Image (tube, rainbow, N blue to C red):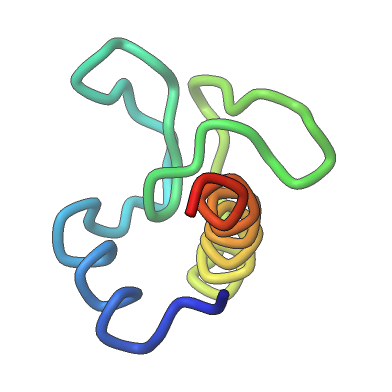
Length: 74
């Protein structure tokens, strides 16, 4: 399963883009487009900063992980 452009646009719309870490509505440090853990497994922490291209890279990594999980359920 692969997410389409409409799916990515929807995620970006609701998550927004933040290039400096912030606390999300549950109090978790978050960065980019909803990333809470970097691809290397390290948790996002307050004070972290990234570029827009890194935000897209992290989003695609996060989406691929969720696609795998959803694929197993359907």
